[in-house]
Length: 243
Length: 107
Image (tube, rainbow over all chains, first blue to last red; front, side, top):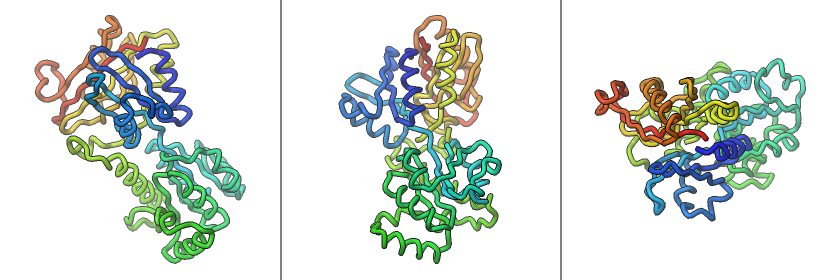
């Protein structure tokens, strides 16, 4: 690999932009295709597919047998609510490889001491969320229980292509939330994207257990997306562990 | 699959820019039960230091040895590890899978 290709690739990845390296494994010749350049590439169909699933793989192409290494951004987790659950959710998500950001305008909650090693923004969602670049590689969870904070944040997340959106609250709380969001003009299809009550049903009680339930559900969504296209051979469970 | 090979590729860049000889190994194909997914990286320097993983520890030693050859020659190599190759490589994957690893020099 040429050093300048590697440098450009790392710059794209640092900016949370996807890219694919096309390697002719016979000659070792390589080129970098940025996500924005895929449409004009001769291998565009194969490249687009790789980008969608985030899976690398060998492909027989008119250029010969090539290896496509798909580099998609690390998943990010955006949370509203610097609450008790977030204190365990953030470290669990970090262990799983997520870039974590917590948004909470209530400065008493959003203190750095309570959240070491996590980006905490003490602003209202309408100000804090747009610069975060919430995208297809983002999971969003609303945990404040406060409609003034959670509702605008959910509305913003729904306007983006997040792979997961979840909101804390009982069925009753969620029913009230659905009513409010509908009043604001959101469609049934939009609202159906919200996972609520949040998390896998594992009987979680403590904040840490709820964090595990939430990350379990997020992981399921993340991997389902990758598996959406039937693989050539079914991968055994331990081959699919996140890298 | 969404993966985070970040530190490894950044290390490859930093090591090379710092003047070290560097090779990059990538898992390009797997069959059966393989410990690390396709696209996983291992970066190796000219002194045999390495970062990352292509097999969860089973064949890293052999990949590092081959990588030193690749650094020397500048020519990429395709390596294959698995049960069938156990005698050839004297290493294998305990999980019973087969993996193919592409090793190239960063230059």
